[in-house]
Image 1 (cartoon, rainbow, N blue to C red):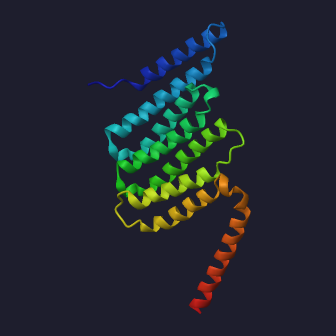
Image 2 (image 1 turned 180 degrees about the vertical axis):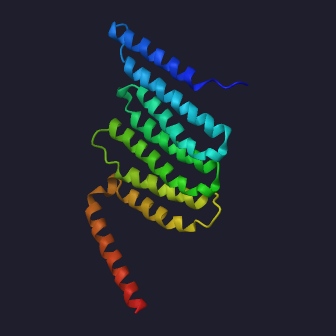
Length: 206
């Protein structure tokens, strides 16, 4: 099967952009610029996705592919929904997850993948409920990310991830609404305990 020359795709995209801008200029279409850039992001993302799907050696191409497709989705979604942050950040996160699932030696990709999707979810919660405290949700998401590092298949031992997972999940629970009034005291106690542990370890080593 003969491949389509990239000049044809880009040329057709330029013509589409010209048509959309002309329609907007004549008052026949609203938001043509957003449609044009959305279409451009789709084409660019699809190109990287094609590279990723046809040659897994180029696993890195999954990251720009899903990033560009996430940008496209965010440009097409209405602002009133408040989902543009999730589409963009979630798209980047999916790129890292795709990198992991095509090679378990890239277990490190779980961490940015989970963090970015967590940030996308918290952005949606911020938009849906103005003034809502999302710190607890954020730390819970981080904790679940490290928990996935610990339990998902990897080429080496990752039991160490249980410790940050447990700490972050506990912190996320404590930062939830029932415990929000005690947040400052929790941080103070954590600093005292952390300082005492470090001093104790130093004295023990002496």
